[in-house]
Amino acid sequence: MAHNGTIFLDEINSMSSDIQSKLLRVLETKQVMRLGSDYVIPLDIRIISASNTDIIEKINEGTFRRDLYFRLNTLTLTLPPLDERPSDIIYLFLHFLSEFFQP
Figure 1 (cartoon, rainbow, N blue to C red):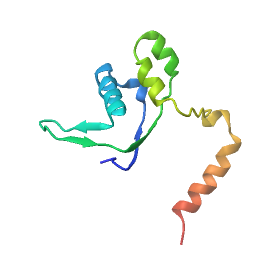
Figure 2: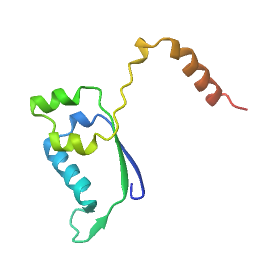
Figure 3: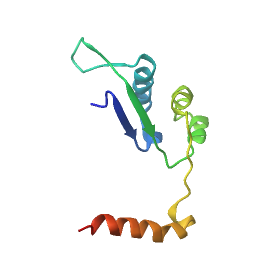
């Protein structure tokens, strides 16, 4: 479904090692095969992944694959939590207010 598009993987740190292996294979081969099928589907996708934990720590613990991390780690964007940037709250409030109450 994500072919020629983008897929967002949230909380990637909680993926099982089995799923991590399958994802890595898809990223390396750029193809996927549906369950019970013998037809290979080529993929052209962008992947955005997010985690609320330190992935390097998970790699050192042995719960996250190092090769998958390096395959996904093209651009790292670290956002502090909203309670550490209270000045943003009013801007977000006004934005959502205008989104929900447009005429």
